[in-house]
Amino acid sequence: MADTFNYRIDHHGSLVRPAGLATEDPGAVDAAVREAVVLQRRLRSTVVTDGDFPHEDFRGAVLDTVPGFRRTGETGPDGLVRWVAETLPKTNGPLLPDYGTRLAALTVIAPKATLPSPAYLAATTFEAGHGPSSARELGEALAEIVRAEIARLVSQGVRLIQLDNPLLLDHVAAGEPATAAAATAATTLSFEDALAVDAAAVRPAERPEGVRIGVSPGWAAPAAVDRARAERLFTAVPADRWVLPLDRGTEAELDLVRALPEDRDVCLGVVDATVPQLEDIDTVMNRIDAVGEFKDIEDAAVSPSRGFADVASQPLLSAEDQRKKLVLVETIARYCWGNEF
Image (tube, rainbow, N blue to C red; front, side, top):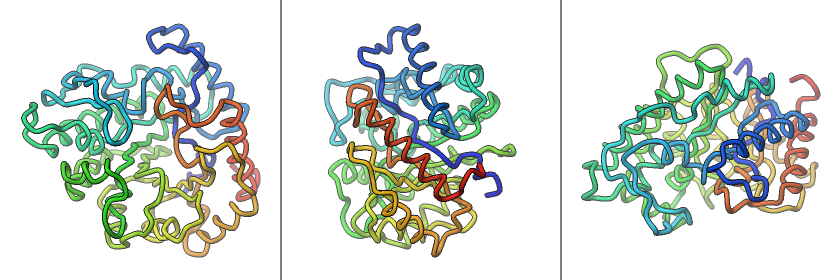
């Protein structure tokens, strides 16, 4: 991709919230977002987000906004508060109001937005007997909503949009699903249905110059990859960028990149966002060099392995450890590409 260099230093979107930040206080959230933008600018990130501060977790842009979902008192097998779709959802406005406009007023760095994928939401909120007749029907309705939001964000100047579907890599595992959450979701929404739903969301009628639509299909590679299913994933969903894990140095991580078509760029999750220990730069560079043996690194970017606080109340690291990890990502990018971005 000719303009991949614009987004070399990436991150998933969610950042550690300031202590005591309440999403019900818009003024406090706005102030925290301004501070987060300053942090990202100082760290020389090539994208900037609002840290996902306005939401309870990474699904919030949809679940907090779109009517038709009911919050239950249960916790699902993925550890998240469970929501159930009680009617076929229809949007009554933007999912991220004025997102690009607000960030553009704070910095010239390219705004990035992150949304939950419609297939992920359908697989985790569908319940037989509640509204939608099937998870596929629910997913298709959500895909229309997400697709419209992508077009709205692009019109506001957002240049990188990422859909998160933490379940997709379990679908390409060789053997049984690795987690209970994945096994449950697979019985609710098949692999082919999940591909069709997410493909519908990321297939806009037009992709303006410089705009990239990315997909994060999971935060950790399976123990082994079914190459045919991985290739099916990457070709069925027409995303420009795939955000793939490379923080363990496993053969499965390399197999995921091997399955990627040549015309798709890749963002490599090279540092572990779940532990404070900093990675050895030589070790990380060796992993990137291994990718470079079969993938043009000019079509690559680097990031942490996942968001730092995909659930607001459960940050994975302290704010200081997060800062050190982001500094390391920036350093690795300059080892790879010098200052030419």
